[in-house]
Image (tube, rainbow, N blue to C red; front, side, top):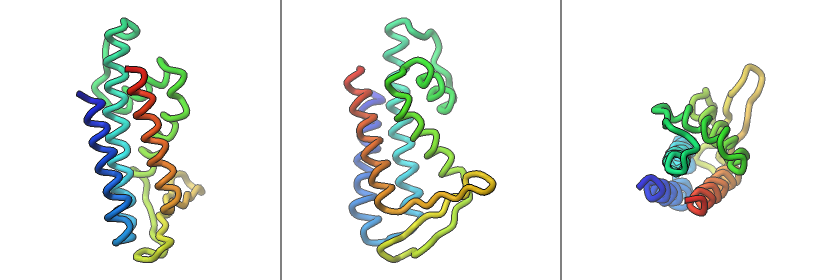
Amino acid sequence: MPIQDAKDEIKRADHLIYVSLKYTRTCDIILNIFKRLIAAYDYAILASLERSKEEGKTSVIPGSKILRAEMLYRLKRKFKEELKLYFFMKKVINSDFGRREEYRKHVTMLCHIEHDNTIEIDVPKVMEYFESTKEFINLVEEYL
């Protein structure tokens, strides 16, 4: 069941945040958290599209994860804001990044997403993304 898989990924991300990140303070842990959050999104998106297929709103579910997200973006208006975070996180894990204050309290990952655009991702931002992902999973569960 994809929604259960999404919840399992949230549990893994929770452990990475509250245990691994707390003690190691590295950008690699932040990157792994992003990968877990993206996986949770992928499972929730799949569950939503399966529901839409049952309702007859779509006939085919794409094989590509990004195409699934784009399809859900077009189908469900209430998921648009949450899906923007998903697309942002996909950009982050595919970007080049730098590190600042690694192994310290204010560890920061510097993502170079576009030519002149550098985004700083610190622990409070990671927590914000984590909470937003949990909200999205809950929204999808309500929809199912």
